[in-house]
Image 1 (cartoon, rainbow, N blue to C red):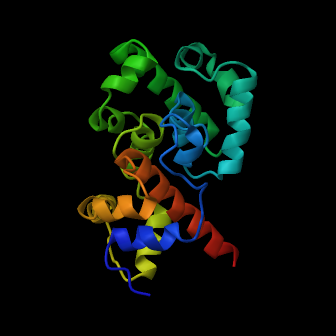
Image 2 (image 1 turned 90 degrees about the vertical axis):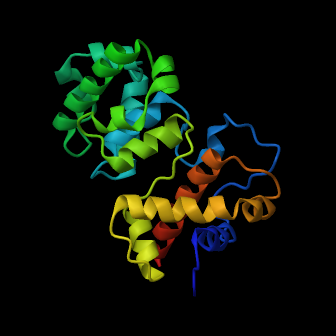
Length: 221
């Protein structure tokens, strides 16, 4: 099968019915449509750090523990004794390092923005990339899935899928640009495909989610 651009890839994936269907009656703050669990919340920031080199199922266990202890917020995580946080994250790979980085992120967030609401309004990619433990993929996951920005995540699933269609895009930035360019240039066709003017931030979230779910399905076969 030939995929000429990212719109063609989106169209191909959409017909696989990989995510809950969506139409013009959707609510922009309904996390179900954004693919990432509990999207548009601080939980995504934590999850984006914890999921590195770790299965998502393990991250879910850690997030559940944080919720049960009522510490899944910036202020609580910043004040929590490090050894207590490490114990809660024990089932996650590199949990000691991630606990340190998560607390440092929370401390820097409070220092530079005052609170999470201000962070959501004012943070930029440069600030996120300056934080230890946040690379391009984690940064863009936070920008899109936590903050609702018009940013497309590219990851290892994306790389393997594009390579299977003959695209040798080696850098993160090249993959991301390819993914975003095709849908922006064909936005009228995107809207026709969905039946309404779907916002780019939500489209990027669902596009990435479709890539991941389709890739996971292929691995099961």
